[in-house]
Amino acid sequence: MKYIKKNEEAVSPVIGVILMVVITVIIAAILAVFAFGMGAPDKGPSAGIRSVSATGTTLTLENGGGDKILATNTNIFTYKNGAADLDNVQLSTVDGALDLAPGGRVDVTIGSVTAGDTVEFRVVDIKSGQTISGGKVIAT
Image (cartoon, rainbow, N blue to C red; front, side, top):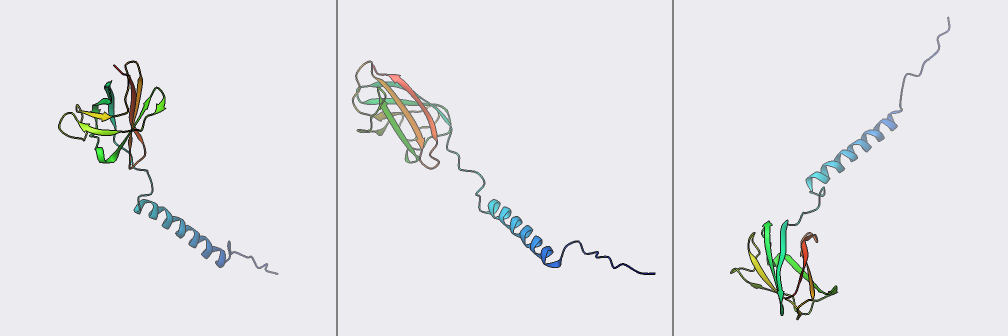
């Protein structure tokens, strides 16, 4: 009787080693993503900021609720009648602090506005680049 030699190897040893190395590299990459925190971007604070009034050279903003807004971590952009108004945007205190806590108010010194001008604002978190809030008011 004649015996036929059967090849029972499914994959050559070299291919098996290559597959194990690839799997190890993939697992290491996944662990590195979690270990170094590259998964999700930073989120900025959340607040319901609204404009209370705009008169002369002052825009008064109020934090209607949410996170405390730190003046050092925030940019405020103002627009008068649709055009950027970056002449003199500065914060000044209304309630004793430049930081805008929930329920607090802060004055923003802007370029001169006259009654009937539309003043828009956008509060942006510096660290995340996200817009925290925005709105508009008609100057009085």
